[in-house]
Image 1 (cartoon, rainbow, N blue to C red):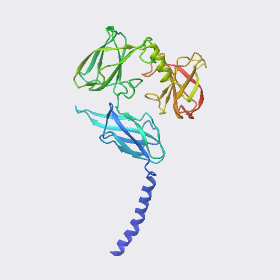
Image 2 (image 1 turned 90 degrees about the vertical axis):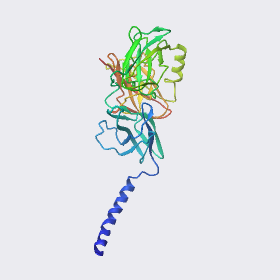
Image 3 (image 1 turned 45 degrees about the horizontal axis):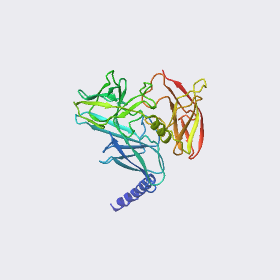
Image 4 (image 1 turned 180 degrees about the horizontal axis):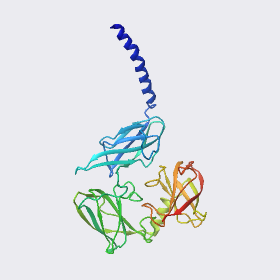
Length: 364
């Protein structure tokens, strides 16, 4: 019996030692990693599975490098070695009416770098899978109202509905967009939820694109709107204000298009190498270039030239489009920087670099 015990010890000790060495090899040096907070409709979301990947695999067919979960305040922390990581949040839950849904989103700032200590991932909202920007209406549930300006109905204005406010109620992250009728009225059939509304009427008449002096624009004064299942709510008057030319010029100079020490420039051309005016150039941190970009250029000039101002160096993924946000519409121009297969361009801080030409095509 003693010989058997001795034999077992000699067998187990090397196995335990190997296991401890393997665990040590997988443990990050120090306290490095990622931390952040996950939200749903701008509210903390607990019980979310946080998956960390080494690559931006669209189909997520590979196993995550690391997995964590959020607490009841939506906060999470994942220990990681030095490197660049892609973060995704997932949660399967059941609504109050018994419907099963999957919530998911990827961090708009992917990838995130871990060097030393904890890297903070900016908070982001999960969205219900399958909606793709469109909300699935529930019976007898929705909103209605009338868009006005100076007390008069505004026909053919667009009313945009957002499920979160972090976008600043701008860009392509809206869940629905409807146009008012001749009497300025609109109607939105929706699921129960918490919503933010904004209405705009551009002089050019489009659903998307940069707002100009003289356009009408305002958020709904009663934001956010809480809508219960089976509730049909009349919002009443939704007043718009005209964009003042002087203030608009000041905001352009000091805001989105303000000059910075770091920038990239280039020229927008069509397939025949002819200049294309009125094209915005966008910079993303994510190679898939979805959602709201981190930087936007002023429209390209008559000779196709543009300057995109940035606040820091890094790798940016560059796209070009004739309009802000929303789905592509016939007649729009769209393109990407093709100097690299992933459309990325590395920018040095405090430098002015040239992208060369960016080719766009007209979508029909």
